[in-house]
Length: 130
Image (cartoon, rainbow, N blue to C red; front, side, top):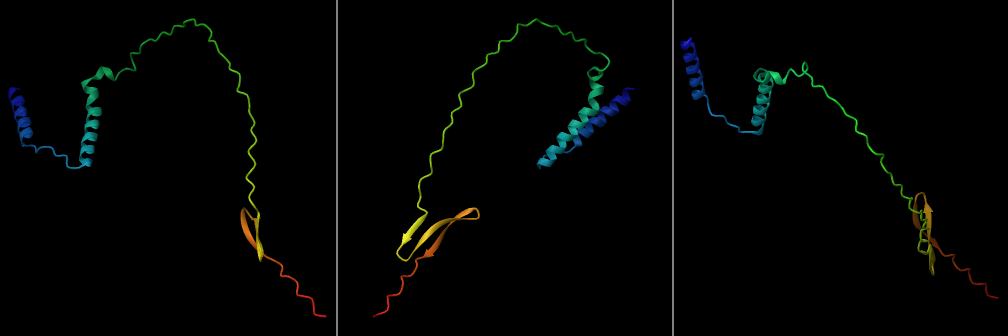
């Protein structure tokens, strides 16, 4: 039996010495190492600490005590008075700009306002000579 233990200790020592040093060159290597450590803990953990995982059989009895409480006092505030404010009238913009030879009128076309040019009516011809 001592020989088996000595041989297994010797093999473990030789494997530990001959293993290359760990290198974490990339972030994916680190992530894989952490993931393998997490899986190892989940597989080996119940064997190392078994009483932590058999909680389904030994349940604690929980006792709830009711403590008499005084009724809560609720304060209601009066709602703020509603104030209606009429909006100020829009500034009076000219909708017609007059020129000697015509005028621009602001008109609603579809969903937008457009300035439209309307030429002035030409003056009547002079009366015929008599």
